[in-house]
Image (tube, rainbow, N blue to C red; front, side, top):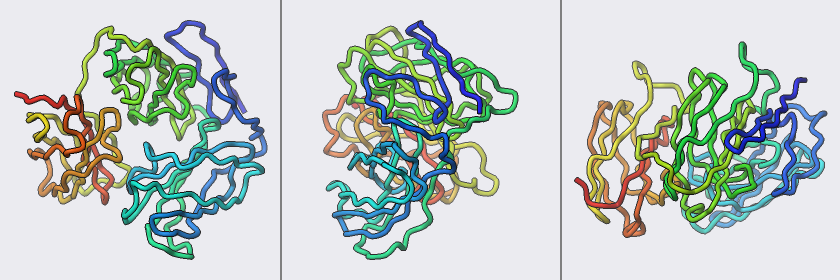
Length: 370
């Protein structure tokens, strides 16, 4: 088993290692004592029972030992990403465990709920979903997991990825440039307080590395970090295990934002369809409505439209509409801004299909334009 270690002292480039193979020392977090040398496979969990709007009981399988897992719940289709943290559990001896978690009050009345267990230390995670109906038995689908960090580099790839900070707009966005990014990989981007290395931070985006190497990305700074003097940022792949982290001063040094940010879907494309949908903002009427223009919308699909606070990507936001894509392609839609977001300076907006899995999100200034 090969382990990648490297120390870089410059503040703009921070070392990476393969998750689950080694651990960097951390002064800001109490890292649990782990010995995963004898652990193999991936953790999963199934739904045992539900008490409607109150609690859910799960049964884990092959849980790694001596680890800690954050448990989050969110709307169906989010995989629990960006959801409400309901507990942190210690895996102890690992293996099969039974846990009961309270359902957050804001999810009361929801037909289906996503639930996720993720370790901010080892990187292992699993997610599932359940019907929010009282039941004494497990009638849910098989648990869904992502393989643990890999110890084998992609063919032809060597070294480790890094990234540097290019520019910052205070309380708005940060632009980074990667170096030696692994090809054909997907990275989850998180931001958190200084000293956390982005571990357990707010998920701000998921990006595809494409051909790898050098890429430039711009990410929104989450509202929870507005006013922070320094911010940690992390890119981590849940599949290959590669990750990088850095930090930046939350002071304006240049940059711009508001570009459409799509993510490839998790499902098989419709016949004849390729690529992924995006949309851009056409006009805004302050505290009233926003008009968008879609591009490459998949045909014969239905999209739920949500709006939320800046930095949420619209996940867990207020549902404002459900639209049918018809023949797909380019469409114009106008959506009302929910009362809960009136007065907001910036608003996130998201279109997501609960059936095909396609989605795209963007954001806009809540000012009348043009």
